[in-house]
Length: 130
Image (tube, rainbow, N blue to C red):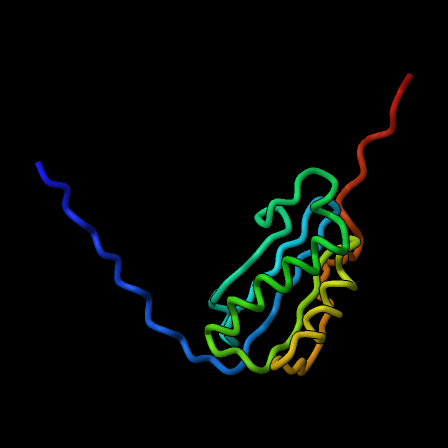
């Protein structure tokens, strides 16, 4: 029996000029997601997905590489202007924001911190009796 050759259709090139870069910097990893203005995901990259393992995932360098990878994919979609949403307390946070601004052909319009803050937090555990 001869094997059938399967051809995949290539997805239509999106041409979106404006987008939002969502950077989620946790203590363990850094996620970078590029969306359109409606919030539909165009592309993403993570420090772990780029081959960093263990504690190296949470470094500023890994965050920078994740941003560069995501923005390269985003450029293929036609992104030229972006807003940045930053979330989380991770160490890669500042570096990730700086590296978005350093990419040629991408203009940063705004920057917003969307880290959730507890107003009064959840109820503490009951007092320990020893």
